[in-house]
Length: 260
Ligand code: PEP
Ligand code: MN
Image (cartoon, rainbow, N blue to C red; front, side, top):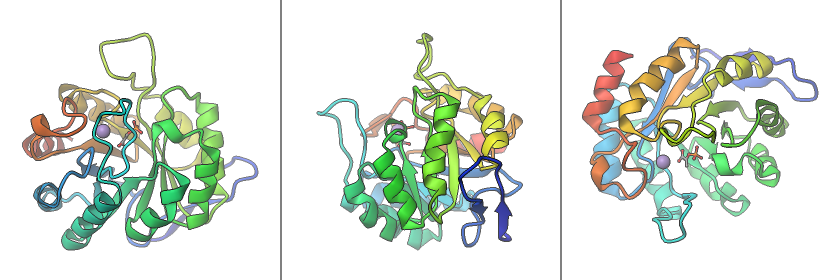
């Protein structure tokens, strides 16, 4: 993708860049970021990355430092997980994205993966945002499940003080509705695009919480002009160590791409 500069109107923040040294966000075709919720093993990453690559996916996700609600849940493979993700990315020629949970891990992750993710629970962690801005790496900022769009925009401004590119991700908010894990606030896409001029993605997995709802959410995301989607894909969702209800199997993901 050709380098291009995007300007946004918000005061105080510098222009965000899109291009990322060879293609990620802001292109005319929606970007699909896919991969497992969590990196679990070398074999799992090999199984999923090889198939995603064949399907044309350019950005591979995999959580290594996992923010889990329950202390007894799988917490991720941490440094080893980052290394396994990076290894799969190198082997299959894909860009990689992984969450940084804490300032202490920022340098380690930044040296190994292409895009740093800020998770929903950390959107308000301004010290982490400042630390990530310093790395100069592209940052993928997820909306807190309880953030207003104004707060989301202010969090993005912390990142825009750095040199790296910034993309936003709507991942659902907490409402009174219990039929879904979160409520996908689809209008966040056009509103945030207009407000900051940054690429806006939709995480169609965490916003819905169920594999059956991923395709409708993805269609809605594309229809409202999202720059891309993030989808959790696992070689065996039923056996996944986290988020097994919402991860798509490789076959389900392939069907989703056809529909889109
Ligand atoms: C994730 O994408 O791995 C994740 C934990 O999502 P969120 O921060 O949106 O809950
Ligand atoms: Mn997950």
